[in-house]
Length: 335
Length: 191
Image: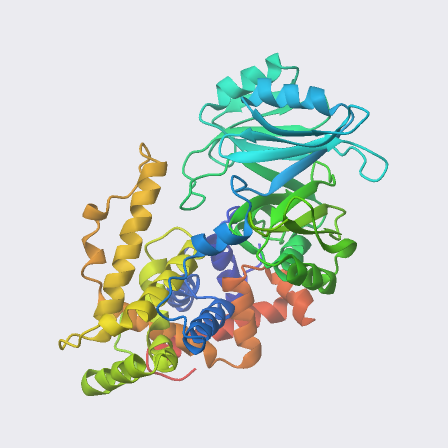
């Protein structure tokens, strides 16, 4: 093998520091290279300049608006724009037989039906099923919103028991929960009778945030998944964390946070081909997010409006074909 | 990385006391203290949590609490940073407790009682890294961009090459030179 240049050797060593799928660093690095490895390690802690500037700006705003003595925890801000009991980015399932889908969610995942809004013809316009600490929304598919096969990641206390219940409720096995999954979690996979994929996992060694792991997280398999990260950051003010890339830049997995709730992405491959999802996310300011999403390249589906149930709502389609229902809770005092 | 004394240290003694008094009488001047201490607090936190997002949340919490409680701060001769580190240590201890509650059986669960370094941070190491972070701001602009894209955004060489319209080999060279420059500056020499 031809000898690698110092710059290439250094980059291999940096890859080993930064990515999960690590190439082997050059064995016995030269003394000059060895001196640079600690520098690279220290750089992995480098703060984001955008974060430093944003925090400074936030602090300045508080002082200039005489807010310095008022508490400013994220939790209180989150509570203001997020509908109560709605902590997660909700997958919104539109299926051909919504009542049966509710039965499946209740049986398979010990869901609790909490809202059902029927149409005059008996079909379901909107329903919500609580699962663990999260919520799933659904309705009967129609011409405007056809059925889509979506993928959802469930964190449950006992993946084996939930997997078994899902099969009893009519799901088709893909593979039973195993400790050998690359995530390190105990993880199994099943498909429901409506064509949706469910990752059923019990967490090991992952902490989502102060409120604990959210039970329900949408999971998007994307073509060119790396393009989703800058888009969603610019469009919805998201923050990507835990990005694991292969050495050639393919996103193997990333968790993306929007206003305190999360979804996951990876590069579509093998059986996990790209699908489009419906997602419902609460944001601090629907109007502002809608405008910035269009600037970032989203297609506007429904301009912001005040919904009768008390949310400021809008919808967009991202460049990957996913539909995002944006919402800001206006509070009980609103119509 | 061997720890050496940084070329610039935060304001000390009377200077720092004056800066604190200025901010207490005019909170708009808190940003001077923020600029002096941001990197130190961030480094103190990021070395003790798992990920960048948590480090950012806790750093934000520390400075917001410091701003809110600045009026209660009394100068007793200790550096202002000691007060900030105490706020940061409390924020970290709370974070550890939350992690322990969520993950009681994990080896990763951390008991604040088992972390004496929270109450006695190694100031020399912290100052060293804070200085190091600031040196990145003074790299030539293209090198600085490569370093941030690579280490902060964790982009691959190929992605960075596409974004900067350069070859992958050129990006690797820029990365190499940037690290050489930083090492030389931290060692007090010339790149």
